Length: 188
Image (cartoon, rainbow, N blue to C red):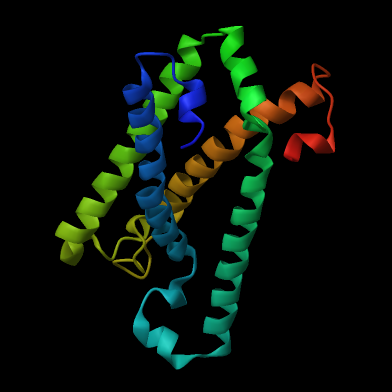
């Protein structure tokens, strides 16, 4: 949150702090929701009884889940070029005075969407666990043997597409089109 002092215009410090804090706080429940939705693809990890059996299949699914989570965590480093490196670079960005109502609206809409999505899914899974807790889209093992994982796959895909798509569009597309050049210094 140290960048807020550099980014906020005089008189807008509180709203800037609120926006950044809301976006930060929206990520935590969202990551928990997405984690539960990933369990739809690892059915042996959905209940304690199957985990307690400790079979090679359970270990294999657990290893696959851990590998996927580590890959996702490491791939988040691809977003580093979006951040200013130091105070000087942040001040230069503010001094340019560039304003984008599209990206401002995009950030606010994204934060509100993620906050609402994670709140609704958390509420439904806690309040109506007996009715909806078994649904794969909410991280359950499935209410029936033939329940499809398509909806869970669609939601997880949309979230990943959003996260990686924005980073690609803002950082790597200009490199591919020749507007910017790639350098390792983008990452540190």
